[in-house]
Amino acid sequence: MEQPRERTLIVGIELTSRSHVRPAGVDGEATTEESLEELATLAESAGAIVIDRVIQARPAIDPATLLGSGKVDEIQNRIGADAIDTVVFDHELTPTQLRNLERRLKVKTLDRTQLILDIFARRARTREGQLQVELAQLNYLLPRLAGRGTQMSRLGGGIGTRGPGETQLETDRRRIGQRIAKLRTEIERVRSSRGVQRSQRQAVPLSTISLVGYTNAGKSTLFNRLTGADVLADAKMFATLDPIVRQIRLPSQRRVLLSDTVGFIRNLPTTLVDAFRATLEEVTAAALLLHVVDVASPNAAEQTAHVMKVLTEIGAETTPQILVLNKSDRLAEADRLLDLATLTHRLLGETARQNATQAALVSAHTGAGIDALLEVIDKQLTHDPVARQRFRLPLGEGRALHLLHDRAAIVSKHYGENYCEVVADAPQSIRHKLSEFAVQDGKPDVHRQS
Image 1 (cartoon, rainbow, N blue to C red):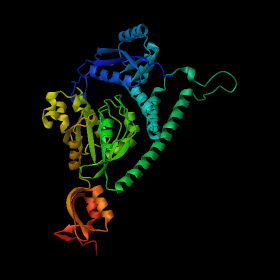
Image 2 (image 1 turned 45 degrees about the vertical axis):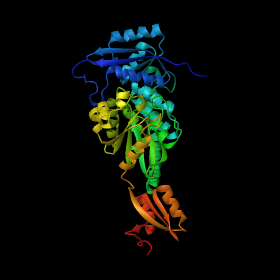
Image 3 (image 1 turned 90 degrees about the horizontal axis):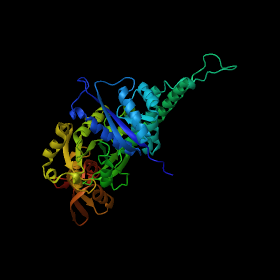
Image 4 (image 1 turned 180 degrees about the vertical axis):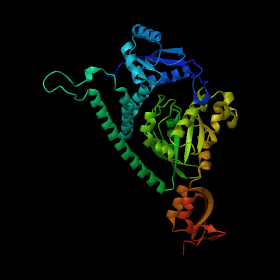
């Protein structure tokens, strides 16, 4: 039986003092309204019904309750009037603030980080994903154990109970610490296993390309379009958590590996970045990043800046990028008619200049622009470069001919009396493998025949 959706009130704070105010859009900062809109989407992705939104403008954060006392009383009245089950704050609450607000409001109280952790816990499917989510949850919980009251103490009356003993709080901290240590060991094992798998993949000359981008930018839909896979592509945030790798073929017939990873978001909790570091290594090890941007979003520039910020945090800021301007089918007709450079600058501003040398306008939903994107990828990849080569194959070398058909782009093919001459645009690895059949200056290369 499906559980009833929780009636939720979301709350934001707008700091008005000069020391806190930052212009919207600078360094990826969003307005309070935009941030609350995203929080509402997160809450709905977690299965809640957002009843209303509350914003308080104040010069500084109240260290006890985040908001002013009067605003807390107002929220308390709203809870009773609208039958609110949960209040979510668009700001990370300190342990003291969380405890005080729960006592005052008497309903479930969460902050943005807890909400994101809850969504991650719901979406993790693989053992690796579940381990990483649990580690992030415990790291978040550990400093918030204090203040649960003396009822948690194991001390009591009666024989054998007097003395210092160990409080329940200390027990909880010790058990959580032990569990965190165990999780880190298991995740390190996963990390080592991924490293072995990555080394095995790199032994074969296949470049790895990673999809990165803001959550809900359409990465999984693009992944499905490029690979023919059936990865869950949902409008909900964080529909994909676990990394997925598939092989695709480029126009040059080169094969490459494409990986889809978790989407980024503003104010991504550091506990999550740390916990998902093993997964995000797929991004750092990639030869090329496809930075997917939702061009129909009014916050495209801010979202792109946040992705760049996370890439810097994980050490992938220098990896070559292609900006994939997705959801072109939702653009206004006038924007679709603009040249790509003008459109990119209009939508993303200076953010577009960061480490992205090429851009492509696509619609993963309709398939528009996908062929052009594959051409751009082909030109950008420097690993296993493609060059035109003439091969002269004895008629008995069917395996070599099959390899050229499978891994190279055939330009022409001519049969002689006892040979087949093929001109192909072939990757370096294939040219090296078939070097004994390569024709140089009109003659077969006999370098390897000796």
